[in-house]
Image 1 (cartoon, rainbow, N blue to C red):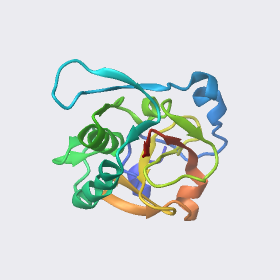
Image 2: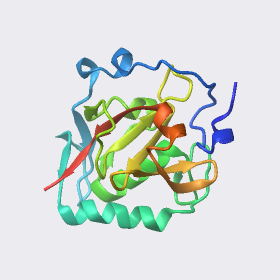
Image 3: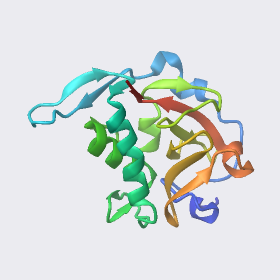
Length: 181
């Protein structure tokens, strides 16, 4: 076993190195969740909305301003606040704050939502999922441009290049939960 922290991933779970992960098994198009609960601005009961959620361009752009403000925030296992984040807590926090989306808590659960992007042709705002052990999704980040993604690693919230060998080898797929209009 090799901990994700060894690779700077921040470990949503402990993992071992490996390869051969196949998204078709668990996250296929047949098993995708195409709706999400969202809280209303004025409060009250959550409403169900289709994915990808259409968001105003201003709100979409504000997501990246918020990410910039969280860079350097410390890592905390199970963390989902600016006091400390793990990878899925970071995504969950931002998408709730910016879009009112009520996301599942783990990277593996989150990976079943949205439009599946099976190649590396992801765009700004898409989620990127990684499998370190080749058997499950254990890390998630948010694309901030055509190459870089933001994520909570063991060293804290940071930016990394999706196309460096370490991440490219472990990349499983992307998912689109939001789209600006």
